[in-house]
Structure formats: structure tokens, C-alpha cells
Length: 210
Image (cartoon, rainbow, N blue to C red):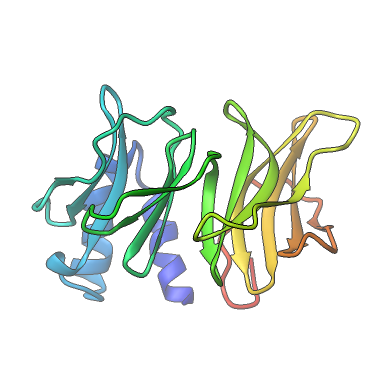
């Protein structure tokens, strides 16, 4: 696991640009250098957010480009998560579930979300106004039992981002008054606490470390 995070850390450190720019680096690192998988085994899912806002996929060798969604997304800030044979995604206005081949595209919940995670039958996501996420929420993968885990209720405007599920804990970054701190809360909404007061920009969970 440490080697995996090390590989993607190197990719992020030396790559500039969006999805198109990073694809060759991923291929070189995990296919050619590490030989963990073959070109045909690896598919990257990404959102096209320039003139046409759709969810697409492509093999790492540049073949097999496939458009998966046909309705334009409401927002360029698209959230998605791949769990087994399913893609859970939000277009900014609702949450959908779709098979990885693009079939069975179904709206499951009438609320959009970003930074999505799926675990134990739940979809965890960030929700807010526009591009500002101020609460962590969850809903069953069938769209039932929506609930708010925690939300901004402090004296200062704050946002949350970079949601990560590790066991029974949700780790996230909380930004308030231009300072980012690392927090965690249990998936049932209890025991909200500060993990680190040091400035945090992103999270990469690994075993018993962050």
C-alpha cells in the first residue's frame, strides 16, 4: 500500500494540468515501470468539462474512448466514485448510479454532491451552495435514508472538502477563516474532533497513517 501511494505521489508531484496531462504519467508508472497491470486492464474515468460536460472513459493506452453520459452536467464540479461494477456520480443537481459500461443510468437521489465515497451500502458526499460545501451527508445506494452527518454551524463561514472514509471514520479538511485543519467524525455523526491543527491541503490515508 505504501508503494502504491508513493507511486501516485510522484505522479502528482511532477504532473501539471488536468486529466489528459496526467494519463501518460499514470501509464508510465503503473503499467511500464511497476508492471502492476496491462494497458488493456486499466481504464480511467473522467469528466469532460470544457464545451461538453459529460462522463467518459478511456483505456490508458489511449484506445477505447467511450462517452458514458448523454445529458449535460449542471456543474463542471462533478463528483464520482467507482464501486465494483457501478459508477456513482453527481452532476451537481442529483446523484446517479450507472454500470461501468454506461448502461442502467439511474437517478437515485434528488440532491447533488461532491467528493463522493461509497462504503457499506452508503454514499457519503459533501453538499453546499454553489462550489462551497458546508456539510457532510450520506444516503443509501438505493437513494433511501438520507441524513446529515455534520454541517457548518460555527460563528465563521467555513467549508469542508477532501472527504475520505477509513473504517468507521470520515476524515476531511475543514477550512475556516483561510486556515485548513484536519478533522474526523464517525460515520454516524458522533465524535467530531480535530486530528491536526497543522495546515492541511489534501489527505491520503494509508494503513494507520495519513
